[in-house]
Length: 242
Image (cartoon, rainbow, N blue to C red; front, side, top):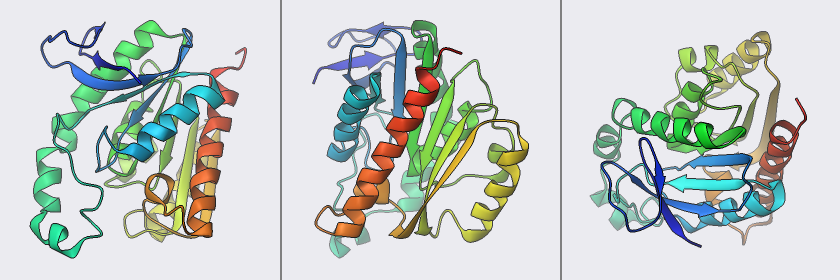
């Protein structure tokens, strides 16, 4: 699929360098509705996220954008599973380099650009991208719908301020999206006056919606169910007549 660049102020064709433009994987041809994926630790080149983009474009009838918010700083998907690679990788250093303060303005710029070109937009985020997704959801001028899976680094004030329809896909076992934070989320969001869908995945762990092992029936089912859930949410809120 073609790569384009999603810039702070303009979407331009591949090969044109302009300021802080972001390389972006783009798929789909709907001129009215778009979905932006905010990637996880493994960045915009992660094969599973590109496959999800393909599915969303086809099954939800949207144009999907997967920008590179790490500026070519690619983490090997095997890093967390390989003890030798894990020992050489500093998670704190990586997240300090790509912190909320550093990357959120770029994510906002990308969301604004899509909102200026499409009648309705959604943002779906995995892991690292979820806190940005909630922040976008605080401003309906930036996005119409948000969907998130296995949140990382999300803080309660980000949950408190959601003003658009929100979908959360949560694993049973998740050291980042703790039982306490799950409880808080399910207590607060229903009071915000926005459509809310919470989908629970028993037996699964953090990362299931993007990095599940397809050789394991439970994980494969989680991958498929989470993908289908996101597609259904996009269909409901991006293609409605309202």
